[in-house]
Length: 457
Image (cartoon, rainbow, N blue to C red; front, side, top):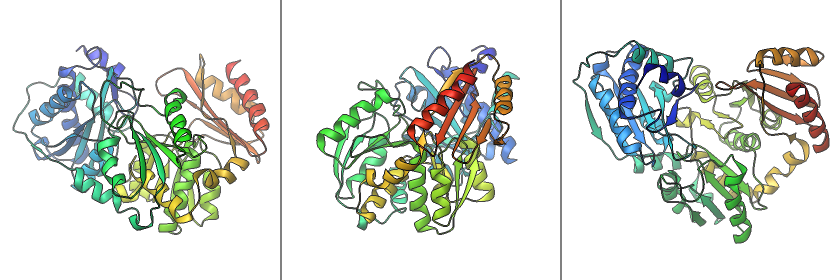
């Protein structure tokens, strides 16, 4: 593979591309070798002393490519702990629970079936990113890997039972009520990963698309897209279920539909999860991202916690939680991080915590959300193509100079009763707007259209 093509597949937080065109077996092996060298740089260990976790999802290309990632790691002298076909968070758990030096998950997450890729972490399950680790991997490959030293080894392990046992520790299973729950696995990894846990909780389950299938015969495994939620919304209403839970392809994110068929935004879910965590750990620090509804800090502060705003992106959340503490962090995109889970994001723990919260409060998800939905009116993320994102951000700051303006991640503009954040995309000439009004839906729409007109002018 020409070295110049690496610019296409190395993203801000992972490696991603079309199988065969962008990433083939040779590329995967080179990435495995580059990862070993980067982990050696980060840890101060020689590659021959590294222990690295490995997993893969259900994509059709995953067995071949995971084998080649493993070949690359072994060629550099590393010992690979290969968990086989698992959910992404199981690799994070493997690295954290066994104190490994790093890990690689062969996955393209929620992308269509033609895609493949790799999510990589260092010790402590902290994600490698463009700021730390990924560029070093790329540099090792681009400078020429040369002759491999060899001497590595691997072992194959089955971690399902131990992972599921540990995940269940976050709740009290005895309080779970026999709720009726529609499950949409999107033919991804949720079925084998989460299914056995839920089966043991006495729930009335309606599992759909629960078998892993890299052909994705039913719909793409991306519940953030409204068209991929249509099925579960219909199913919740048809079956009279209490709620629905849908996972993305590698099952490190889960999404919720209430009993009325309404989708639950990620920031509202963050507020509910924060409430659950603060019941268990009073006064805890809770992280939330710059795009989020004020429902999150308001909820955290009302319940006696400390709300800490953070840059978007899992590497930034995990690193801050590792370095400064923090019991829980939530992102609008559906990534939820838990100190009890090696600061990693999980699609299992949020499902368990929400089921526990509903059971303990003996209420519905819609009722839990009613107060937030009546106070906080959010736009969701809206993308706009712009020629010069930085110039446009300067224009926004000038137009709203009478507001409180911060630049932790893009530009955040805060007034007393409305606010917004505009962030540039890491990979495209896009600006992403998230706006909220604390007055009404109509006020939110008016403010949204005003800011969009400025962005798109």
